[in-house]
Image (cartoon, rainbow over all chains, first blue to last red; front, side):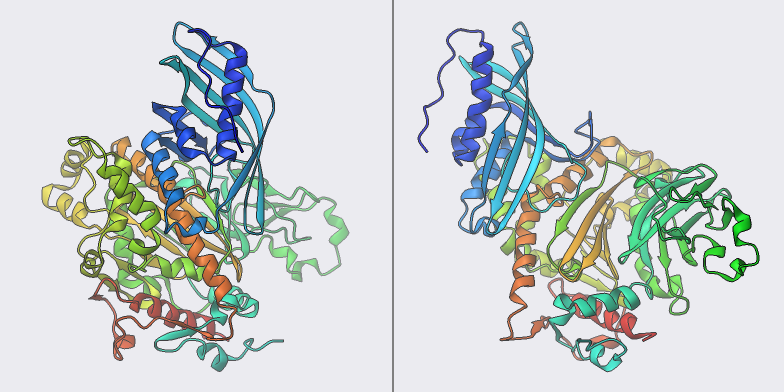
Amino acid sequence: MSMLAEAPLKSAVPTDQELIDFVVREARLIDQQRFDEWLELYADDAFYWMPLEWNQTDPRLTCSLMYEDKLLLSIRVERLKGARTFSQKPKSRCHHVLQTPQVDSRDTAANRYVTWTPIHYVETRLDEQALYAAWVTHHLGVEDGKLRIKLKRVDLINCDAAFGNIQLFM
Amino acid sequence: MTRYAGNVAAIRALVRDQEVHRDVYVSEEVFQLEMAHMFPNSWVYVGHDSQVPNAGDYFSTTIGTQPVLLVRHTDGTVKVLHNRCPHKGTRITSETCGNTGKFFRCPYHAWSFRTDGSLLAIPLKKGYENTGFEQSHAASGMAPVRHVRNYRGFVFAKINDGGLDFEEFFGESLSSFDNMIDRSPVGQLKVAGGVLRYMHSCNWKMLVENQTDTCHPMVAHESSAGTVVEVWKKAPPGTKKPMAVEIIAPFMSPYEFFENMGIRIWDNGHGHTGVHHSIHSDYSAVPGYFEKMTAAYGEDRAKAILGENRHNTVYFPNIMIKGPIQLLRHFKPIAANKTLVESWTFQLVDAPDMLLERTLMYNRLINAPTSIVGHDDLEMYERAQEGLHSNGNEWVNLQRLYSPDEAEQTNVAINGTSEWPMRHQFRAWAKFMTMRM
């Protein structure tokens, strides 16, 4: 399960390959359940957004499956470690398959880089295994020489379907 | 093997004063009898009339497991129709909601129906001449559910004739709907924000009884709400408490909080927690809202409306509402061990958007399939659904704060940790299961 630590950017402006590597590494940290390191990839003002509606534009007055700031994400990470977190006894596991991320836009002046990544995500616990398909949009920026997530948007292909528990992160 | 069909004594024997037999949760036969008797004998929530504002608007849903649709008829009233073509049974609606225009048209053979369900036309009608078609079931069109009541926008239907009329069935309990609706300065709600749909591998009644279960939050939700409290403690002093913390942290309130909040019992299985206060009592004020309420109602009345902090109001058989945050949960039975939970939210017409924003945040933090609080609960339901297959003990205990004279009492306020509401729900369950059996 070993993996190299986060590599610093080679220059102030990330290359496309560095953006791609970052997105791939984020998924790998989730699959390896290295959630503390995963959380460090998020900027302090980041949001993790999983819309409920197809083509949803508003996270505030339209409900979402998740629209969480870093405080709520950190609560999730702490909860997963809890001695009395019974829905994680036994623990879930997950598995990402990513298409190569595409760099949709690069705005160096605004320090905003957007990638688009189709994924298949498998979450399993005990005898149950569920497969989800989604498009993930990362809005990234450079902070202190490292890429950080400003917004991660996960659009499930069946966002309006009835789901059972989704306990980890896509 | 059938043990319960037509056997009133066997059904009644499932519900004792202080315990219920596990078959109410695990038996497929009992489940089928609920669908055949208990749901059709009850006034069941269908939908809200703001989902069908214009003539021809429809919304498809279920009563028990029966497909029905809610439609705005050309005369402006709402109708509830069985959602099947009288010809071959084909579902009529194409989308969950939409507009059908002046009539429904079956996509299979183009039979068409007015929005009250009556038959409008059949292609090649002459093929039915001299066949006695007028006497057929099909000739009367899409069967309407005959007993429909639109209570201030909330539409309920009862499939069977007889039984209790709407006012008898709900009695005093409608005060919770009134309070939720009165929280709009113009006394009007609108479905808003989208519906969360969460599939549960457990019996629907486990969810219903959980709504009045005040001894589980500080235990089952220690993992989620307890973590919120712990993480929040580490915030720098003076940090403004975020809305999310205001919402989740009160789940960790101590037993005394829940004992003192109180529970009220009404007739026919209805009741609510939070007589005196609730987990919704201490939310931050929303700027401009109280002023609007005062302008609309006068200060005394506005204070009285907003002073109610009812926690969960359960309407037997299968919905719960939260008046203070305009939320309705619909526990839709699918099988003895499968339930679809729909969590609906409402906008207070003419009130600040921040109220809806908070309601939606509550809904996704507590009721979504991605909710850590939801995960806590579903884990317990699923373990119970599994554990109940043990033959070591066939009974579920509902004894907490039992009082031998309680069955005769109604409209009473009691200790907030009593399991009386669950006993009360099951007394109603036995009554509506057997009333026409």
